[in-house]
Amino acid sequence: MINTIERNNIILEMYNNGDTFEKIGKTFNISRSRAQQILVKQVAQRILKEYDFDINRMSKEEKKLLQLAASEEIRETYLKRNKDKQEKERNEILKKIDELPDYSNFISVERFAEAVGTTSLKLKALLPDLYRKILNKKKRRWSWHYDKCRFCGTTAIKHRSNGLCEKCYTKSDDFKSIAESSRLRNKYKWKKKQDEYRKEYYKRDEVKEKFKKMHDLRNFGGNREKALIRDNYKCQDCGMSQKKSIKIYNRDLYVAKIDGKNTDLDNLVTLCRGCSVRRRLKNHKLAK
Image (cartoon, rainbow, N blue to C red; front, side, top):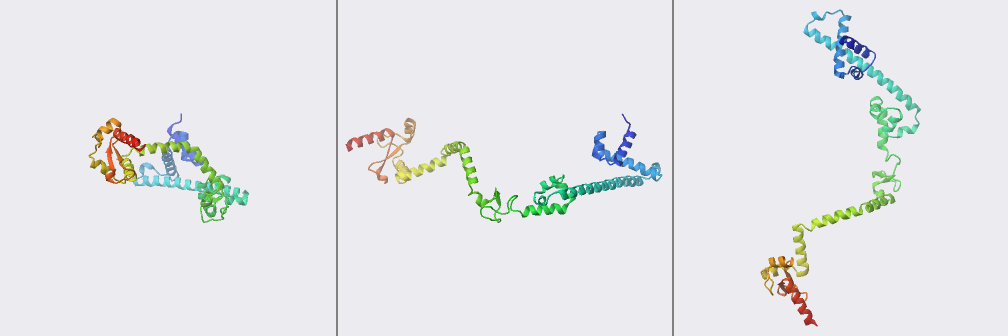
């Protein structure tokens, strides 16, 4: 187990050898911020020895300047190391670029970066001109593998798939095959959803009212409700009320046509289910 003084000296030595704050922090199980604070203190002590300063005789302002000088020295060292590191990486990338075939300039930025052993972000930082060059070529191309639509030859309409523009793709056999496959695969699922929706739809009060009016208009010329009102919502043969009809037969009162298909109000009569059946049987016998 090393003491604090030994640890701080090792931290200074590690930094002088080019180790990062992250590596120093992991080595001693401290944060990068704490590693930086210790390093500032160590550099400040070195400056004191170098210029033979006595910290006990320094004013508060002079101590602040000492801390600032130590921090600035560390920052300059970091920038120089970073610059050297970037220059080394840049040279390595350029060396790999020289070994690549010409067509490499026409692939995506990500694939180009992968081919030279780096990332697109590093390529952008280290070789911004080359990054923009590849990116612009990517933007100018109609698609990755096609310069124009292989069916109609356009470049004005956006590429959709397999070398076809959005307009031509919907006419292609590929699209029709995919659409048909999707339809068959989801046929029963959609039918089930439609049936469920239809069931709920017909339960709505406004829908019931709508179909009731349509039925009235189509079969009674819009006079069915008028006939019910005129007959006081009662069967004209037995006097059964509308409420009683619904209770006994589970049906509303009928509005029957007395003579043929005439839908005039004078030709309509309100009947319960039983009386309606009796009238039809009677008319059937008379017709014989």
